[in-house]
Length: 333
Image (tube, rainbow, N blue to C red; front, side, top):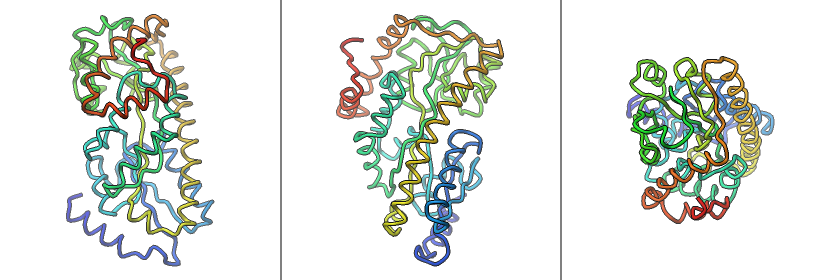
């Protein structure tokens, strides 16, 4: 959709009275399948909103980029043509908010519980507040899962990564992470990863287990090591002008619905990753390896270099704040 169409849609949306007798309409656009964890969470949110507001607010969920494509949706939100999105955390950095790249740092969250101390605590709230000058209201963080490495050779030590071509998302942090292991970063669209692995354009990748299984990467990757080194998640956001224009009672109900949906989103993400890992093992095509404590410590030590390299870009202050919150001590790596 081009800019003129976006503007027309935005003006049409703005013309609709927020306080009309008809239900307030929230268009929730996302780019994944309805049965993906994010897709299920968006539908759950819509159901909770209907129940809590007794029909005063209607959430229409548009999955699989049916309303806006990946590169269009942020502009559509800022223009008011759509009211809610859940982009991956990394997509906020191009708005000038490089602090959000802290979530890409390897091993900054040793467990999901420590991650949630950040995303659901004061640090998470302060990060969401940084969106407001961009005309965006941050509502919640939703998990996708912790990532593990895979390749066609065993990955037991950092040295095993040397000279591998590893597929990554577009991210300066992930580029640094890959080079810290002696590998070569290859930025590849997610939809092209299977073919790239199959043809040898890339040798390996990193994914939450659910992505690895649903994209059938077990067919083209012989080894997976459960490094669980990095986080992949989403930020649920809304148009700030739209949000501020709602009656306070409605906003309170929507906030409660979002809290409920966040609990559901994080639970379903964990369940689906656990189930996917079991199914990967059952295929017998990918050998799944769990690092020993000493091997995990070696990975952490090797990847601490990325924390140091990216501190000037992300901000030393936000990194140190997360260290304090989670108990991460770089001097003990």
